[in-house]
Length: 135
Image (cartoon, rainbow, N blue to C red):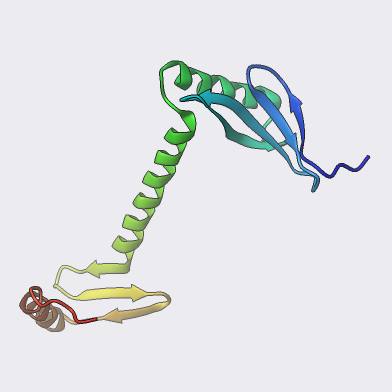
């Protein structure tokens, strides 16, 4: 039997298995927070078994009982991870060795400056710091 809409199988305490017409199966936790109905993704079936989905649901329910929105907490965690990754990328892009030579990577290209060239660049940047760019 072919379905054209998302089909939902309800477990208990807000746990749902959503079956999409394309064949994908996704665990969701349906809950209310601040007077609004929300859903939280708990994983993909069969990678996440029912017992693990229930554990994840129970963890989300504990957060709700503590007055926290599990969906917002997940968004904050992801934002923090993205920020951390951006910081690591920037740290990997610019390197300064013990002699004072600067090396920077832009895409697959790398530019290396000697210690003297790095000192000249610093002098230039310090001198132009107060200059406002024209657009």
